Length: 352
Image (cartoon, rainbow, N blue to C red):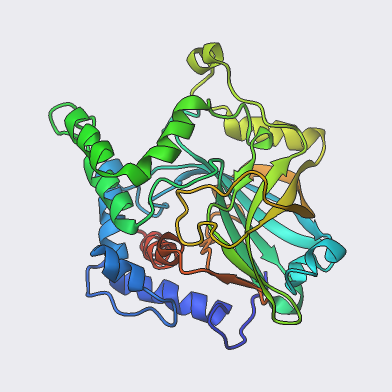
């Protein structure tokens, strides 16, 4: 895999330096401003990425050399073909040239427990690394919930603190969890979705949402605010209540591997076009359902494999690694994810 070494805020060189910085952060030294990535959100929330990673470790424990969150995952490979005529009015990104773009994907369960059951009522993730022309890289990290569970990093941190197991029971204290929900209304929309919608029967039968609002910039430098989601050709299919009780502990990985053996698995990438007044910096709020939608490409997954030793295992799917023509908004969660991911990446690469 080749990477762009060009100068720029989201180049691979920048990404690598952040990962190196993460090793320093991981041992508890003071957080400094990481190399061009704005961290105002961390200061405003009065919580640092290092504190959040430590809280995740407190909630789930540490598996040395592994991810702190979304630890249980499956690697996959395929390609993306954008629809140039559909995307060009909004973005100049070479993702949408119309030519096949190689993709390394990772499907996962949220949380830091590598032994979590595949029936857990937690988000499923799809992370994508696109290898674009001219050695550019684009990352997309998505969930199968249309909204996120925190508007500010403080909420996510407080949730992890509340989830820390009680030494006496080995489980989170119900009273602390109740208090968390009562004092953090921004956590409720995602929790309500997960409570009302059973997990998917397969990664291939799940849609995935970009959660955040992004800026698409076209060749005329016009900016359009968009949200994106990936819609499965196999259709969205959820476990029945009966299946929730009878499915084996682990089935998602094998289901994806077996499905790809039968033929390619596909998702359409659909963007929603924002209007004035739509939430831009709050991923817990969905956009109205009547927003204009445009199909801008199709993702095809041709193979899947256990993650150990596979291509996706050592990728840091930093959502701020973006191609020219796609930029972040000032969403505090989106901006916070990059340095938090870097700290986790630095720890696991150093065997911590």
